Amino acid sequence: MLLTMDKELIQIIGVTLKMSFFSTLISCFLGLPLGVLIERGRFWGRRTLKKTASTLMGLPPVVAGLIVYMLFTKYGIFGSLGLLFTVEVMVIAQVLLITPVVICLTSSVISVSGKHLSETARGLSLSKGKTLLLFVFHNRRALLSVVLTAFGRSIAEVGAVSLVGGNIQWKTRVMTTAILLETNKGKFTFALALGMVLLLISLIVNIGASLLTKRRDSDD
Amino acid sequence: MIKCENILKKYSDRTVLSIPQLEIKSGESVCLTGANGSGKSTLLKIIAGVIPFEGKLEAQGSILYMPQKSLCFDMSVLSNVTYSLSGKKKDKEEIAFEALKKVGLEALYKKNASGLSGGEAARLSLARLLVHECDILLLDEPTGAVDIEGTEIIENAVKSFVKENKCTLITATHSPLQAKRMSDRVIMLEKGEKVEDSSPEELLIAPKTDFGKKFVDMWRY
Image (cartoon, rainbow over all chains, first blue to last red; front, top):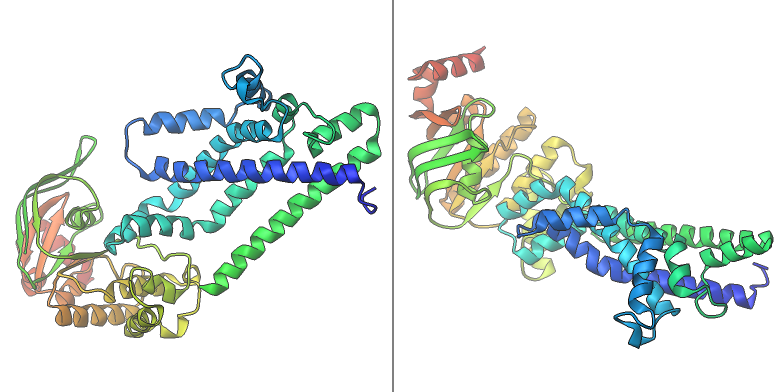
């Protein structure tokens, strides 16, 4: 099945990658700056924001799925958008789950070098923009791990996406929901094949990320 | 000119620095000395504007500051120095390379700074400052983790920078002997208070306070 590249399998992989890519992208776009801000910024409500983010890290996926489901169901606040059982709403549920993880991990990455890096930057009279850039560049390896963790969580998620996506064939079926379905049907070969593809994608993403960091280093 | 009036720094209820009056003239080279926790670093941080404090501080001109735990950025040695510069890449690299030569790190310019030894890292931290001009140079134990040879390189580079820029130099150090080599005035701190303010020779030969005597004697033996 893997070698002949079954049409349905390719479609499932495509939906999975699309959903994981966009949810990771949006989560990192929101979570990375927020994580830096929580750690280095001095503003009212900073501690509350940090506590909220760490609490939401433990948010059960099905609960996240339920919240999004209720928001986007026919009689929900966003029901008129008609997004329920689409890849878009799956991305929204994933963002709700992953963003707190990105915020907390970014915050702890920054806290390790934060004080000394900040003092060093201040001593060199670096502008705020250059200091922020320095924080990101100096911690790029650790931040890349944050991005990979977010992608890993996204690609492996099943509870929320099956709830809001509905696991519809040729539309919202992703690898994890397909594995669950095929296992329930007793089709272990197909389920196993999907599991192998899932692992392979994770491996490729990890290798790509480490190559990217290596190339950047030699550019210095 | 640096003028401190009733400077007070507390962490929770603990007073770590209390300086009623201190004046440092432009072009003066001053060493802050004293035991660990005496308030040297705190005073430098206050002058550098890194930490908040109570009291009045006047510091005229641009300030460059090298913290005690100055971090080498995770990039090449050359990029560490060019990062704070602006202008064309080639010009920045030429300036940076000259600074690296002054601290004897030119051969390592391609190496990633995270792989440097403690002494090399201290020299790189100094090189990052040498590419700029300033009115006040603040160095917090710049040779704390450096061997004798490295110490000499750092001291010479600092001295020629100060001479070229005609700037005020304030160095925190544990060593009264380094204070003698680097400065024409030594301020000794104990538990956050100024206990001695004299020339390095005076401090070494005839300290005014018991703490000063004890501190200098410990360095003699």
